Image (cartoon, rainbow, N blue to C red; front, side, top):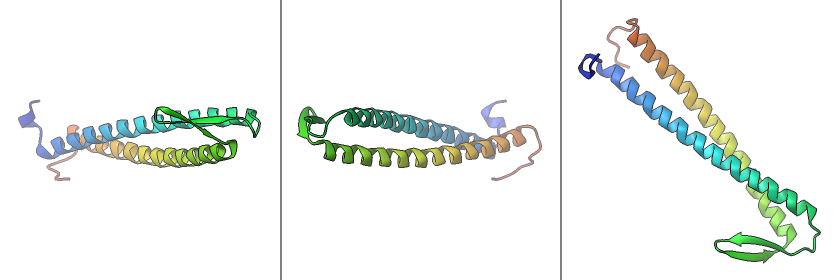
Length: 122
């Protein structure tokens, strides 16, 4: 079947399907990056729990190490963890929405290619 034989509305569905696949891939990559950041935050929090309150704590700021205290660092890391968990939740919802959209588009394409759809313009 050449491109000329494929009706324009099927081509449109195929294009939407490809765009949704790319969108899903981007969301999954973002989610994976946030999950990796959360893992690092959890490791840092675990290490801080092992330290005494008066220990010297340093954090990376660009190419510098800056001295801070345990209380401030715990607060910062807990905020980062909370934000990361929120981002993972939002990305998971987006992922589910895009997956649902992909299933719908795929069903329309399959319906059209099996000949069940007759000159549809959706």
